[in-house]
Image 1 (cartoon, helix red, strand yellow):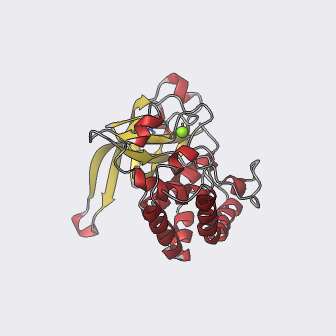
Image 2 (cartoon, rainbow, N blue to C red):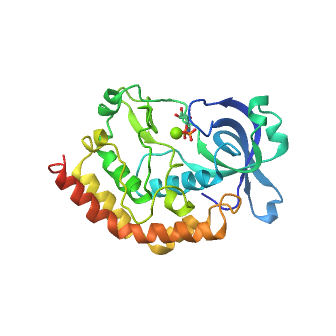
Image 3 (cartoon, rainbow, N blue to C red):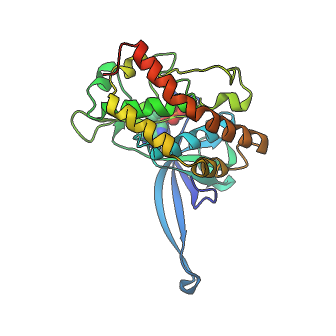
Length: 269
Ligand SMILES: Nc1ncnc2c1ncn2[C@@H]1O[C@H](COP(=O)(O)OP(=O)(O)O)[C@@H](O)[C@H]1O
Ligand SMILES: [Mg+2]
């Protein structure tokens, strides 16, 4: 995530129904600044999936941004994420039922993965060729306290990339994480690990060790710079400080807790 958006929304293309944020595909323009001597900026038009301000509390956009950045750092498959600036002109291109709630401002943008599908069943997830990496996702989700990798209706905050025959999983939607930082229901003192049991069975112990190594090797400064890049329109400074503290405090606990839960489950596969 880059604190200064280089991505600007132009035109609405489509809406994804089902989730609470109702992500929208927009055609966006990327401006890359080039040296002043060239007196121009490079421009490219790209499709991105945007979570606009106004759909869900903007702390969820912050949580999504933070989760996506750390996914990259831990080698968890996840769409690239950025911040995209959305103005009133761009919003006028959206359908009326979106315009009633959508607000201008920074949107959480994820790379539109066109060749993906929502998993139809656990079977789809059990046959992906990168299932060992569920271990790294477990490290990440446990650290951030992701509450809904599997949603109460049985659907998943996961996509399957269908470009290969068995497919590969891609993690999406970290919106329901970091909730103790935002003064929501869950107590920060309590250890919550809602990573689904079905996925724990698919993961690999070598990848668990690798995920934990990458997490412990992360510098405090790297964690802080991810938190610093959250747009001020999404959280206030007290919340930003709470997020930073939560991540730093919880990090050393993750390894011990995951080893304990793996042992309780009868060892890691
Ligand atoms: N980057 C993406 N590429 C392709 N489809 C996406 C992407 N992000 C979201 N979607 C689609 O939108 C749906 C809802 O996205 P999600 O991030 O779970 O938002 P919500 O907060 O609404 O639950 C997903 O199940 C998927 O179908
Ligand atoms: Mg979702």
